[in-house]
Image 1 (cartoon, rainbow, N blue to C red):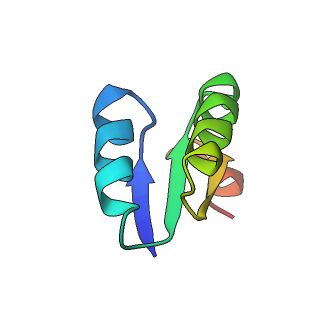
Image 2 (tube, rainbow, N blue to C red):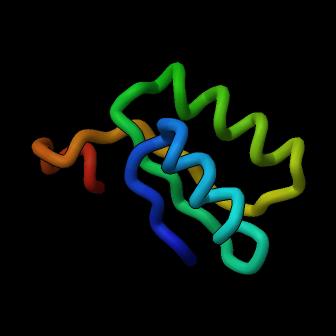
Length: 62
């Protein structure tokens, strides 16, 4: 499993490339962003999870 922090342009590019060979966990603080990314990645056939979280909150990391 590859963990991608940030679902911005660079995070999406990296996730697409890494997702060709690994399951993904994409983490971003924007729920709207990860909802869109999650749907798009699943439509493209990638296997993985998306979560809204921030790096400064313990609850977000659980």
